[in-house]
Image 1: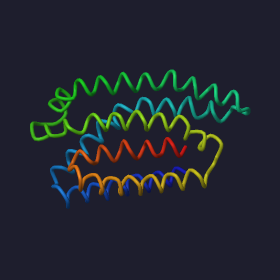
Image 2 (image 1 turned 180 degrees about the horizontal axis):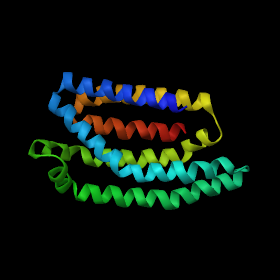
Image 3 (image 1 turned 135 degrees about the vertical axis):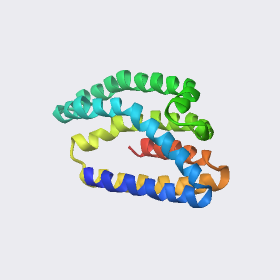
Length: 183
């Protein structure tokens, strides 16, 4: 299961980065990569919590009621944390760009809203998707990882062609909306 994620996600990101470079510019690809790194950094706390506490807890639960209760508890604790973090990053985006990058990255500003919305939807979906990990639903997990990675690339191509660089953020948010519905 980890191997499916370790292969499909980086490959999809390489394809997206290459597509952005070929279609828009190397600078556009760099803007997206920078935005992605910001998302990874602030979500690291959430993903660590999910891995260290939430996954083992789900694995230990045996009945439907307690599983549903744990998912609700996760939603009550994790989702508000993601919302507060995402809002803070959104309102501090100019300062973050200035602190972490340089003036050449000011166009990254346009990517924040839908990237952060996508992050929220991503974590919302993971609260359910971790059930696949906890209960060793190997084939469903692998298929979903591969399909969602392919879909992210396809959505990116469609939206970047239509909307430019911000299309990659639209693609990310839509991709995780589809994933949440799938899960």
